[in-house]
Image (cartoon, rainbow, N blue to C red; front, side, top):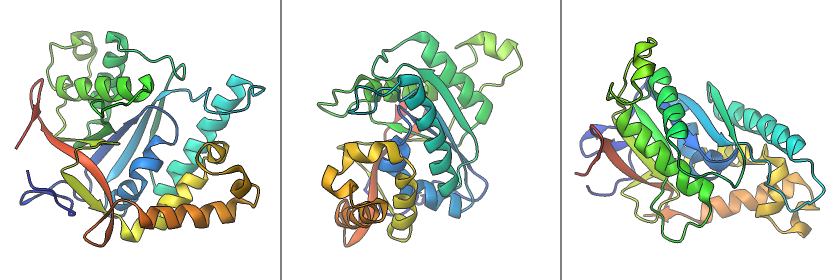
Length: 257
């Protein structure tokens, strides 16, 4: 499939007005950092975007004195604020312990249930096959979300959900972000500022991404530096883009074109 900077798969448009999107992320803030511009664009173009956050984010700090429960609640509030900036509709918090995520049938089933409930046309998640990705939360979230996406439409997987009245649902596309093998580049030139504004809502995380001397200057200086970085990186043919790996979704498999 040729790489493209448009929201199209070949000659077919990937999303349109009224389409439902589900973003499955490992931590509060992954979506904003990796695909916040794409989400802003999707919402602007009439999509209904929802989030599922797998872990509680309770270890995301350099401060050893922080109460994990307090940090988890802080990050949940920050995620709601960031989602509001982008226009995200519903948020699902699964609450698994930060940093301790490993594959399980339970997690896969919970994600399948969310997919069957939300009924997205598009699922977006982390690329589980990124070389040297050491963080288990990123690897496992991407893997379990990918498996859930290709099995959600098959009614004999987690059949108890079907018997309870939840219908099977197969998304059309999956978009993998944080990838090193993109075949889709979404132009976010008009949405960089909104992406930066959403990232800034994750105030507890800024010290992990920016030098301490910069954060001491205040949020406005951090935002200026963030916008400069976003406009510099991930450029393709002079455009500011977010790269992703796109597949069509088949029965139990990704479909390569």
